[in-house]
Image 1 (cartoon, one colour):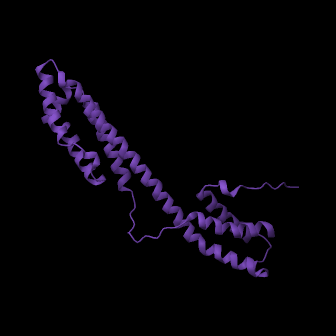
Image 2 (tube, rainbow, N blue to C red):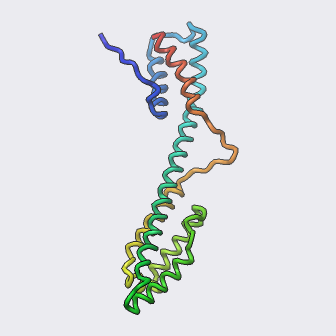
Image 3 (cartoon, one colour):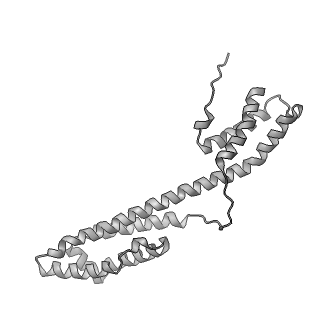
Length: 201
């Protein structure tokens, strides 16, 4: 005899709950039960079938939210790399050799053109950091950043800025009139029919 184990539906992730609903319909379709023998059950069954596309859209809404968090994280990484680059230049304020003094002055003047770039829009920051890295690695500045031993910091910034742009480019946009779904309410509604199914079966 099989032992039934109660499932704590409240602990399921939204995607897991969605898969549970799919499995519910699969199991019901292979059972000998006839929804038409119970008017209330039949009505609830139809209601949940109509909610499946809406629930899937709500899941997509959550994925977009997670994508926004990933974008924010990638932006924080490149901001940190930009700060590390600036910090790496600071010690040369007190350089002893003329080559280091010249390099510090040249690179510092370039970096000063990008003050507060991290506060710009994502698109603007990406473009400006692309230009900054391109200049730092150009023939005009390559000698100076070599003298200051900050090539790796410029490369780190280039990599994190590219990584951000890759994530950001994949982001899907919706119009300001996009419909917002309350996935918790949808789950609550779906639980009504699944509980009824469990009681009936």
